[in-house]
Image 1 (cartoon, rainbow, N blue to C red):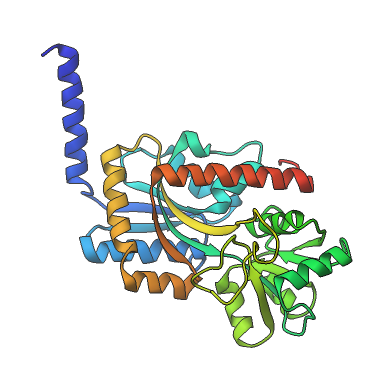
Image 2: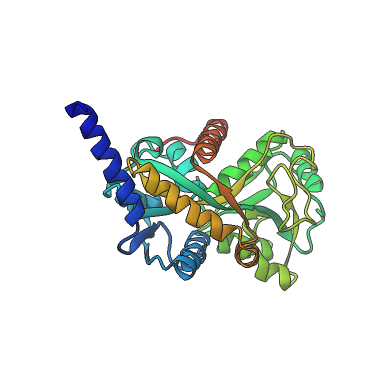
Length: 320
């Protein structure tokens, strides 16, 4: 055996040994949002169940603010050993690169997507007394009065804003954007008749829906969601090509050993197939669990980034 092949063999053995021993200490999972949000809740459901079934230890580390840069930047700079992970969603990976010229991370350079944990549709919501009863009605109304129907969002450049613009533009209509300081205020504005509609996740809509202050016209995905099957899809409303959702995924710093990534993936996938876990994701966030791995997840992120770049160009968003 040559010295070179001996070194390769030693490196391979070290990697395999590292994976066999992993994890030997608590795994820190950074979250770019405050406790209680969709990403935080998704991360805690997953890590708590893995801890219960496999005895792994986790520390969920919430780093909200700065457009998710605190958590993502910290993870990107972390040692690539599997002990620092990131739970993030569509906004950090497929929308932020459209909005910002300079970021403390590059999605493909700095991260390995491990698994898409959950995927949830966004709901198109109007006031309970609105004359619009379906997504088709809303689109027809927007076309009849170009730029006059108002919609609220959690802020300019939020995934909700970009998804709404994608929906409206693809339908050949126009509407007026009114930004709010979060998703909950945007839904509250619809309930108070301040704006005509908004696009939001189920958790923020549900309290108003149960109180009969709002109604749901449809979802922003290409197909109906199994979690909310009563609501028509964008395609059914005559808007082909639109498929906007809010997914949550688990990421590792680039360079994390493949065997370690595979071990984290398998532990996560096993948990996400559990019927009780599936039910919890559906109940808490209207989300469907997935077991999408690195290769497919990477393609999904790239595809959505290109879609949102086109939306940004269409509405004239300038990078900050």
